[in-house]
Image (cartoon, rainbow, N blue to C red; front, top):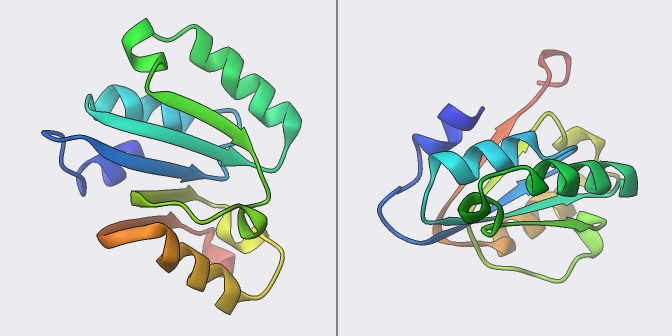
Length: 125
């Protein structure tokens, strides 16, 4: 997933990336390493996941770890943000609420020209 997301984003300028449903932070950390000028925000509703993500971040190179932030949040209730990209690996179908509300929020949180990269389990496609 990191290669798919990184291949669609500029590595030569500062960008903001949201890892929606970041779990324990593996994708966020990989994206920070692959995109040296990106700031990554990992969002997850699970407090234990965020704790593990912060532990993973703490063992990263300091320059990489400084560009990663993890936040426990219910995505649909979270204040609008402005990101160049939102990545979500097998999570969108787990977010409770209407599909219309979810995609309206995703669209509102992306800057013009922003990229949504979402991987869905096959049975949910």
